[in-house]
Image (tube, rainbow, N blue to C red):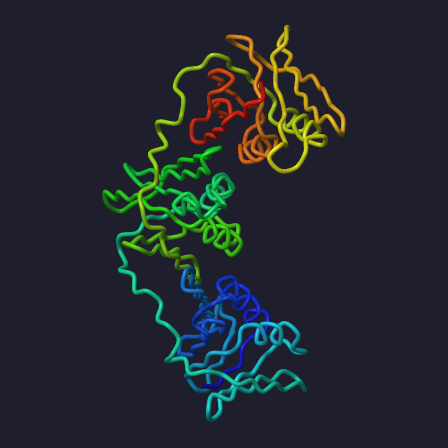
Length: 378
């Protein structure tokens, strides 16, 4: 194998595939990056067997030459060293050549590195996924949907299924749901499907976080292809594979209350900042509890009291309060996470009593919903 490549393109691809490489793996070769050069360009692959990322660098793009292939071939190089070397090379172009016994030479300007490589044939093959039955989502929308739900996945392994986001495709719409059993985040959006697709899968939260970091902010479509135990996200020159979580995701529709005892409409930013201030004196850990009570004249009071530190009380003017009087306590962190995920200047909160879950939605928008379970303090 021998080729010359633009360094910045190589650095970008290496950074992308590195997101799947981990030092904690039972398969030693997976601590490396697989590099394959063909007549069309160079393909880099990183994997930790849960997530696999493949990045393709074409010979030329928009009429500019990026790679010149002298001899096709392949190699697996230690990711840790290779990524550091590529970043620090002195020139804008890099020459790579594989000699006998997988010895690899990396040259740039006056610098020359020799790395011991491994046989690319021993690198595990990526799952083969049938094309054609995919769904398409614009990159911007996909990133927004991930951001608005993935924070609510569970971090505890006691119920592994809850560490993922439940994605359901039906009737031309995609809905993503995440819950850790104390809160729930849901987002729906219409999507393009070329057939009557219906899927119900659970994608690990960790995978979606990594995917979000790699995808560029564009309105280009991402194709999502789903199989029994894998999902593939196809963006331009990028393939992102993730395993799916096995098991049945709980039916969350029953959790969402349909009735309302108290409805409050608020300015999202003002409310968020007030909760943020109240949480300053709320202890970390399980006790970052903030209380909310309704007052006369459309005012609400937000307070927090930690005996050994002090207390804070703040009044916020709501736009409207309907229904019964209310006193309720909840986690400040959960409330702030939910408010940050909601897009919209105004927010409507539906309460069904002090001990029942309550729901936050942007005003006049049913595509996103955040649900939080209150904390018992009374």
